[in-house]
Image (cartoon, rainbow, N blue to C red; front, side, top):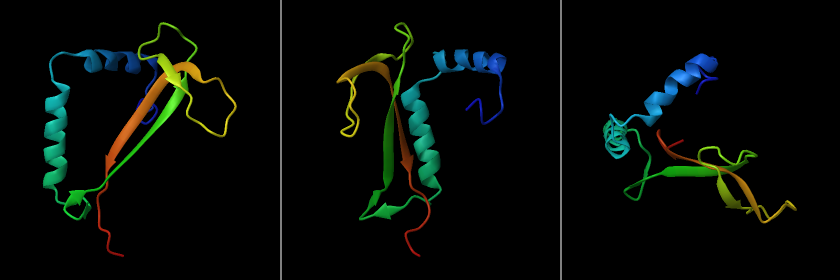
Length: 102
């Protein structure tokens, strides 16, 4: 996000209080966002259900006291690595919009 806006270190640190704020509820914010997106009527539906895509990635971290760093199990079948490592797991879910018609 900071790279997208070409922000530096000072601007990054100004965002941290926003993400740690107790002024809003994540579940309520998510519900509002879902209503806004779905009211537009552009979501792709298959058999009456909206189509979602999801993906994740593991990122190895050396720091032992970093936020979100946990022991993760290596799931790659093509790499010869230890069974467990310290790192973070990042995930994303996206709603497909547009039309399936060609």
